Structure formats: C-alpha cells, structure tokens
Amino acid sequence: MELFSLLMAGENLGMPISRPMPVIAHGAYEIRLKDRHGQYRVFYFVKGRDAVLVFHFIKKKTQATPYHEIEVARRRLEDMR
Image (cartoon, rainbow, N blue to C red; front, side, top):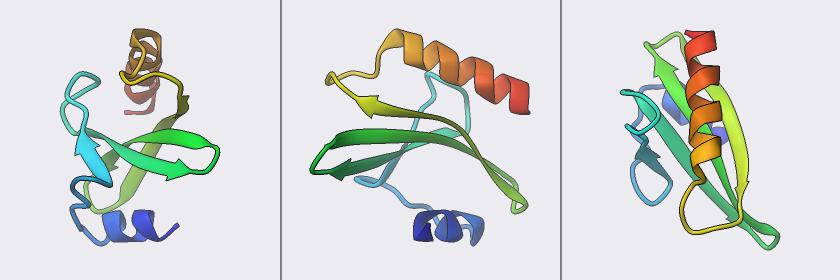
C-alpha cells in the first residue's frame, strides 16, 4: 500500500489520513480509511526508519473507538515492541 511506503520514507501523513493515538501509546497512530462498506482504522507504530508495526485493524461501527479495541491495540503493541 502506498501509505506504508510514505511512512517508511519518513513522511508524516497527517489529518485527515492519519492521526496520533496517545490513548494507545506515545508514538502510536491510526490510518483512517473509508469505502462504500464502512470506515476502518489501521493502528500502527513507526519503529525508526526500519519498520512500521501494524498492530491492530478495526471496522468502525460507532463514532468513538470502543474501549475494548483500545485495550486490544495496547496489548498487541506492547507484545510487538
């Protein structure tokens, strides 16, 4: 996906495509995707210039990201670090 190539090149995607998710962890972000079937969120962490860790993906069903999904994302990122 082109977005990940940009991240690996050190680009900051910024809003409305990406935003920081400090509620998950310092340095965690979400990519905001939308198509005719719904809205999706891809949670990622840029690990230096070597890697982009994609650690969670959800289909949005409500305005706010559910607390349960935040907790799952926190655990997965911690396991990957």
